[in-house]
Length: 200
Ligand code: ADP
Ligand code: MG
Image (tube, rainbow, N blue to C red; front, side):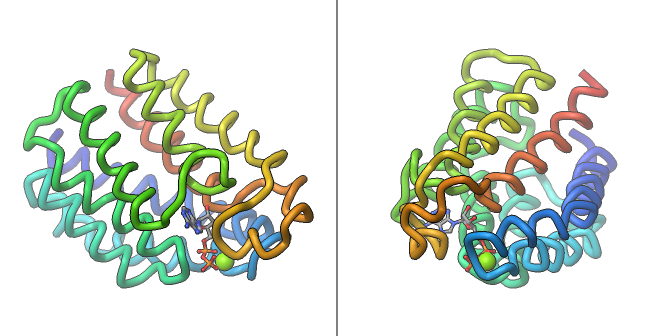
């Protein structure tokens, strides 16, 4: 991946988050405190503002720096979790990752998020999208299939009862609403898949 590619990925991700900030906020309003859209927009805008700086670094360093920036700027519960995802990905990924390395690194990064959040699949969080996306990567699915799997996984959080994060305070009343972090994760996956798929 070239610096130009990474810069395009960052810009596209930040654009997608900005375009959906209100939707993410509305989801978080229903079962949280309504700041998820703003949190994510603030963080990804900050990453976009320095896209060229990140893109000039080798992939592992770029991902670690993006993760650190997200921790500093997103805030809320999701900031440290998305930050951990990118930082751990940076630790595990090679300078020129192939699919096998990306898959293994992504799996370990998800483990790091789960450890940080003391959470696991089925608790109505971003993990409910991250794990199926990892499994789809490992299973050799195409990028278009992976984007659809991410959307379906976010949709599947509607029926779940939240057991982590603010939404868990609502107990059964969290059922019937999509998890905001699952939705933002699916958005990011689709955006990255579209760009990577356009080239593959
Ligand atoms: P806050 O809950 O502090 O307001 P945000 O609204 O930005 O933070 O993010 C909420 C999202 O973070 C949730 O929708 C969920 O996906 C994710 N989340 C919260 N707590 C956890 C956790 N312990 N493990 C994994 N994801 C979590
Ligand atoms: Mg919130």
